Image 1 (cartoon, rainbow over the protein chains, first blue to last red):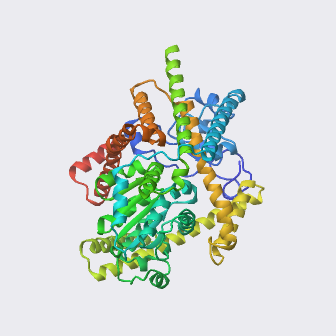
Image 2 (cartoon, each protein chain N blue to C red):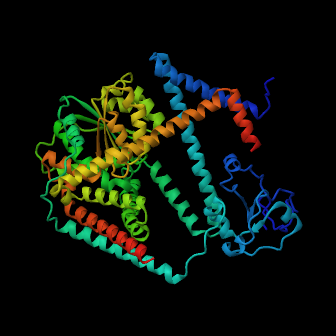
Image 3 (tube, rainbow over the protein chains, first blue to last red):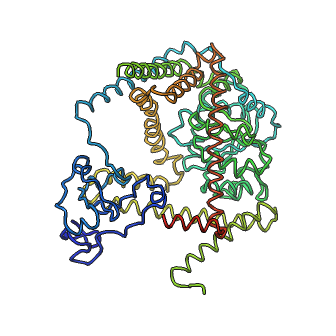
Length: 384
Length: 217
């Protein structure tokens, strides 16, 4: 084996390198207390370079040759006393799954069985893509209405009753990966804010947040070009503010000081350094990350009188519902359905409406897949 | 006697810093005095800067590791190092990712790449459902019912034609689903509180006995 200290080849016997004298086995961690008490979970093995070793555990010999694709050395007296020592090749050593304990993963299925799932996935992907393209090209359901939740009407009302000189803080807490969904939510809200003529101050807890905001503004401007009522002052930005929860605590105390360039931020936003987040009449967070929304609630919403409105991706919305019910989030907009509903309230033909047919077809397809899988499972059960 | 060996001093300093920061934060929370606010701002700034420096060191360490691997003709590591250098240079350029090389990378590489990867998620989910959905017990039936109701209630054309479906989906989400999440949130918070209490408060006789039993086991 190769010594991890000097990098030279050394015989695979003993615990020290014959060249440098460095230890070949790391210090063995004590087994977990829970495992000892309950006796339910086997102590974790220690993976060293090329070795799987634990002095307290003796592996059932029947397990090793069948499941591990390795050649076991002849048991030596020392190894027998310490427990099984299994030589693993380099590929096996890189696999993180091997650290999780025993038994090791089963051998891979034969190639014939591996090809079948790939074909299924290709069929699913092709069908879904074809339906989405067809739905985008022929949006025959575009004039259908939208299911309206009370929260959507509340969010609409919050923006509608803002005073003319209001300032709204908009946080862009999502990445380009979720831009496709989040932009649908951002567009009608931005449109509404600009139509009301309020001042928008942007910020983000993510490095790409300012770029995402710029993209969303440009996207929104394209759709608003049709609306002659689109007015409002130019938006300003506090930029990317690193530090997550800490940054938000700092922001709650002084948004200008929390930004990376306080003097420029003060000039752009017209805020003083001693003004807190309560200077904003409304705080809107566009979020695709549960943790960042939680930070906003804990560090800002519960400590100020500013209303927090969260527009979240469909994936994280269920985990934010308790905060909406407790009133810590004043209104929660979630995913595509609420984007469509908000566009309906604005009486605007926007990007969400342009996707009605594509969304309907894709969801019908997934529903069909679910029902087919359920049917297959039920039939299989009766057969067995 | 306090052991002031080379190992204990940094640990003592770390504990003192943590205690000071915690007390400042608590003081700022309970007494809204300007001195607490200023001190808290300072501590927050220092913490953010320290975290940023640590993150930068971690990124550099990772890059150095992959440079070593790239020298051994590891194509993945080579690509990673190239990407790292490219993004680092683009990020330092004037205008960042809003203009020039950075803007081009952002618009034509980052956005489509990340969005394409994320767009694969529904396909993988549909495939996983098709392969592994099992309706063999009560849990499976409930899962299937929940899935069908949420999907139907979210489908725009269906939700407008049959408003009861959207209502049912909404009730499901604000009822049992929200209750489950509330349980998780409360459970985690209480668990964290308990862990802190057990760490901070000296062990009582009962706790000591429990600890001894654990050690014996």
